[in-house]
Image (cartoon, rainbow, N blue to C red):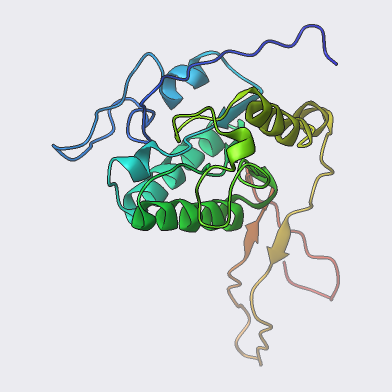
Length: 220
């Protein structure tokens, strides 16, 4: 409900996860190279609040392995995370491919849901049959694409993610976790000890350290 919101569509028919990898990414000789006009690098050039990646079936149709697809998705997610941009990834969609390719679509659907959790968008339920083919109610007629009714299902699934609301919610800060090292005891004439401390910040970075003695007598 933000009238100032803008959606930029960089999608292209026939594209695979290889086409949208970051500019400069190395790809096998028999795989597509990134399209610098439509890839993750171009998407980030718009300084977006969020990116949605939808790669329904072309990787499976082209015979790309599960390992390839998963590695590409992980790479894309890391690039978005490094840029501080929220990323949603849709699941695979059904397609009337051969049985092994449909099994791959189902496996990738489950992997995306597990890997990306709350940032995975369900583009499978309702429009798919149990065997990975397109439910006839939502088939455009070519066994590849959904009809208008099917696209409405996908639209409502994406809408249910409440992406605008998520982006407008400021998360509470989680305090850093600090560890001054293991307890140590000294006995005179030994008069000094070295402590090795560390700190981690799960929702930020450690910019500096400052250690202060808070109890005890003598010494510094």
